[in-house]
Image (cartoon, rainbow, N blue to C red; front, top):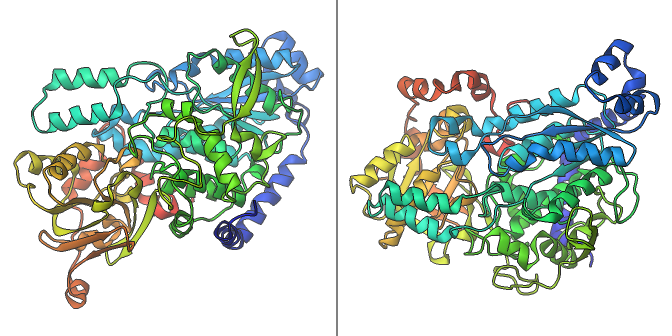
Amino acid sequence: MSPHSTLVRVTERIRERSRTLRSAYLAQLAQMRQRDRGSDRMGCANVAHAVAGVPGNDKLRIVAERAPNIGIVNAYNDMLSAHQPLQHYPDLIKHEARRLGATAQVAGGVPAMCDGVTQGTPGMELSLFSRDVIAMGTAVALTHDMFDAALMLGVCDKIVPGLLIGALHFGHLPTVFVPAGPMPSGLSNSAKAKVREQAAQGLVGRDGLLEAEMQAYHAPGTCTFYGTANSNQMLLEAMGLHVPGTAFIQPGDAMREALTREAVRTVLGKAATQPFDVPPIGEVVDERCIVNAMVALLATGGSTNHLIHWVAVARAAGILIDWNDFSELSDVVPLLTRVYPNGSADVNEFQAAGGPGFVIGELLGAGLMHADVLTVRAGGIAEYANVPVMRGQASAEGVLHWESAAPSKNEAVARPAAHPFSATGGLKLLQGNLGRSVIKVSSVPDDRHVIEAPARVFDSQAALQKAFSAGELDRDVVCVVRWQGPQANGMPELHKLTPPLSVLQGKGFKVALVTDGRMSGASGKVPAAIHVSPEAAAGGPLAKVRDGDVIRLDAVAGTLAVRVPDDEWAARVPDTMSDAQRLADGHGLGRELFAGMRRNARTAEEGACTWL
């Protein structure tokens, strides 16, 4: 199938826009690749320090035999259920590397915070910026500069984008990402959401709510809703940076270890399918690769966080994308999946239906992904339309094979491109006199795509929750929550607003949220115009909204506007963030250390980058 004309047009526009920056990036990569190996290039004392802690046989291989040495960057900790299985991956990787005549060293670890733990707390205000800290941590690890290839161990929200940004700054290295998979299904996401709404109404107490949450989040592995963490895995498959089909194999599955070993073989060019001179990650991640990731996000109704993160990822590879690119692609990319919050299924059901392999195969067949891209596998992106299976004994020593993921095993969860859930993608760009923002329309019922109602302005999510508890919001209302952008307080996710707003919507009121903050992939079924840019703290239009102003959110026309006469709106003086709020949002739980990041943060549409 020939590439779709929109796919070609958007890609060419990105390529032309990025030409100067990308050329400089590739020139730097070429220069780095021309250097001698680390153990040959570095001073004797440097090399001695680098191998002092490794077993004698590994020293011999690195220094004398000049065997490939893999740098491992690990985001393991016990706070993220998705990352807990990564504790023992380095030993497994080292064992497999030795079997293949190579070596592996843990180059460094990176911090990884759990948004589920910090949600609604001051710690959440460090969440977005932790992505750039992770990127810097990755750079610190790889700066040891003794490596011929790299493996990135990480799964969740900011961690994968941070690892990817860091890896792209060492774009001369072949690099493979290694996930751990989702936890087994527990209490369904829809049942969990219902209990949360009941708790917001006071119908369920803390004990009942805690019991439900513990049933939902109950084991090692990624949370099973299709939020940012699982969207990460979908995008890495679409970019060809995984072993194909690795994303959603559970931690306890025997295939998990086999796939981790295959990641070692892959990065060394000794994949089970076919030996291959693996290209460096900076060459794999080109304009076509980035567009493939964008398409995969849209086709699966993935997390809105990636309209920030992948802008930053692309920039790290010398590529410039913006929300117009996402919007134009969304107009032609069909929605192929229904996974919570876009449906009732979880990621385990998605995997059972065909998972990422099915989606990628359908998009390739429809001409909606670039087929002529580099990946870490010899077969290119076509390999990613398959699912892994084990033959032989049911253990890590069994033999991996790959089979076509098509056809869908459950069309209530994953549909072919010829019969999609929707003819267009799950995200929409909104523009108007309130700025630019995005909305995740795939999770919002059609009759809620247009909301017009008086505004109620809040300076924090806590203030909105207080008004809800007092019964002040039992009416048609557009809730404006401002001072939540990168420069104000680090742009936290506002998940705590979903239950009360869902309750109001359930009562029959027309309700919407407008904010310069984030809502992630768990935004629910309430229409939410998020990432409003420029943010209020930078003098953006939300600072001029007053209680009672009528706001129209129109996801059909793609507009977000306040119904105030132009002359009155132009003359209105913006509010400013109070000193008390700046002090409250900038101190405690380490927030003081991130003051420089708040000052330097770019807009959400520029990836909220702090390193440019």
